[in-house]
Length: 265
Image 1 (cartoon, rainbow, N blue to C red):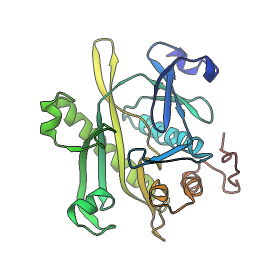
Image 2 (cartoon, one colour):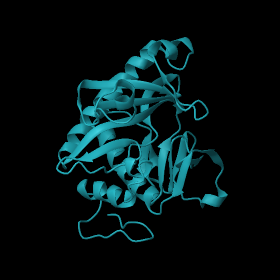
Image 3 (cartoon, one colour):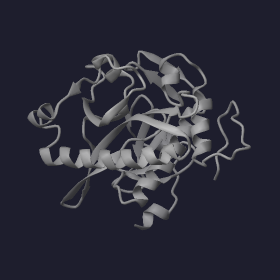
Image 4 (cartoon, rainbow, N blue to C red):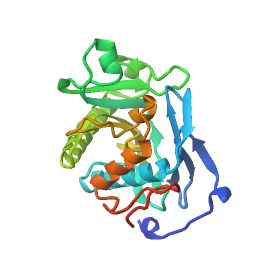
């Protein structure tokens, strides 16, 4: 598709805004079927009851998500990602988002530890996939496959496709992070329906970044993810920067500046 490689940058204030979420804004893309995904510096937790602006966070999430989605695309795992446009924006394919958050858990942490009385850090017997209905008003309640099919959020075949994608993404992420000394505790994934004429397929959408993953340093147990914000631990940008450095996105000699980190071109 020629448009993927043809730059056409429109200033943000001249674009039509399609949707604004807690951490990203979607704008009309340069070609039909595309959108521009802009990463904000907003940090939110507990369904936005806790909210701060953390300088440089959006830049890091954009770059880390680009790195991970590029690898997924190269492995044949379908995503909405086309390419990064600049420090804060990506060109993506427009998809029909399925109103579910798909959480893959490898280690007990967060809500599963609280719900089931499992000590945080306990290795789970196997990876567990959970579904949550996307609704800030309802606080993203956990739902079953029965709920999903009964209310028409996804068909049984689509659930199978989503779970197959989730397992493949988990296998890739767990191995990638293990190789740089990071334990993938869990991650959240969203999926969408990508229409190509009369054909439809389920693809990975949204972002994959330290905002949507729990990442623990294997040697020290340090949290390198958004739990640093949730738990008032501080050092969020420094931790995200460390993840980017280990993945080879940042030069080892680069230092994070107040205006945000310097990224490898």
